[in-house]
Length: 531
Image 1 (cartoon, one colour):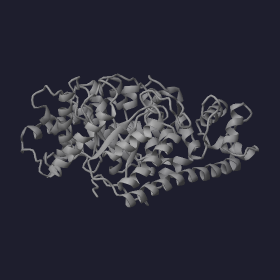
Image 2 (image 1 turned 180 degrees about the vertical axis):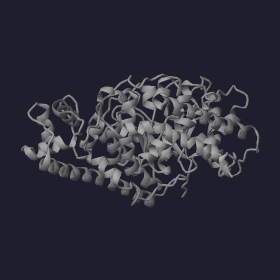
Image 3 (image 1 turned 60 degrees about the vertical axis):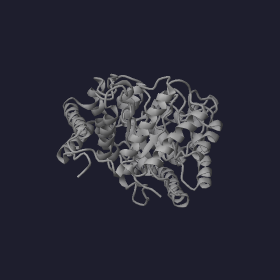
Image 4 (image 1 turned 90 degrees about the vertical axis):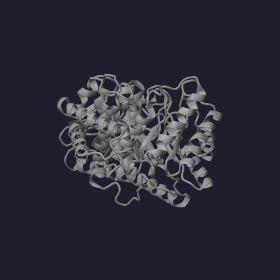
């Protein structure tokens, strides 16, 4: 029996409805590809670099193939056939020639197609092997340095300059941060290419690039050895290049990635079809790499009312769970998000927060839940803000949340100073240490306020899922069901990058990923680990 004594038949019904609602979208993702999915294959095959204007060679190569033979059959056969037919040293040499219009691509047949497919498989296998090696490195690091006890303290750095981010991230780890997130430069999610190299010019964040990933991972490895606990690295795989950024994250051993089924649709106006297709491939990569995804349900409550829309968070979490597991993610990789965003002026707001947080914890007992701090109702009163953050930290400990993002008392006033961050870390450290295993003692009164509220939200979630099954998920998104914002299925950015697969479509990466268990030889990081 759970603390909320949830009706198991209602919970089972909710999951079955989520599965039904997700299935048409999953089928769409299985039968379509995108330019970013195709570019990600080339990145796994080792193609890096960009032209003098900063446009990556993977973009040049995919665009050239698309212009000549289309992408309906995938990028692999035309590209590796060209490598076999023409005197190019490697993919980089081929891409440079293609950018000048000097390569003729074709869709090979017969023995030529077999030879191209075999070469593509070898390249894909080598790329996946590099991801496997990085996952093994993480497992070795965890054994060597130790895993911090939960809840993990999650902190953001966002200077725009990777060389400024690094010392700030290391300092934050020394002050108690267990997870460091490098927030992306404003607008990067809308770029249909991934910048190259180390960057110093981001706005309100630092560009997500492979080199920036490498630099920050090495710096956090150094401080992990120094502190005797593994410090995790997070970035963002949302946006038009979700598959590519997920691939780069796997190659550079990131530990968590923002990867949500609807965040980019609702808050960045990225086309829904493009998002769901890209998402499936990116999550297959995350599954293989042992990366924990972070979902963005907390964002719904910044635009919709946190009480009235509480059930939309649950519905999105159930959908994220279904999409994630279909792509190969295990429970310990489902960092489902939610937030402490109820208006503090509402009577019994803290009891409502406890009901919502405990409901999420019990619906997803093995998931490393990510709990987000108050932002919507923070004001210029920093003393009230600091108190509200303490209540948030308390709710997180009482309900056994796995990852707690630190709240800032200056939220919405200015970009936090280092002193603000230090005080925020002190707040969460005090609450976590003072409460200890308080979650063991927190048991709501049977049939009391918290239990009734949790059951009500679950019931409303089932009702909404039934409507989505009748109307389809894409229509529900178009109607503004999540986060109020309306996003039609054929609107938004990136739809021109969606391609329906033809018979005989070939993707050696998904062929390998879908034929093997991503966790067969890996040691998972349990959601409740404490060493």
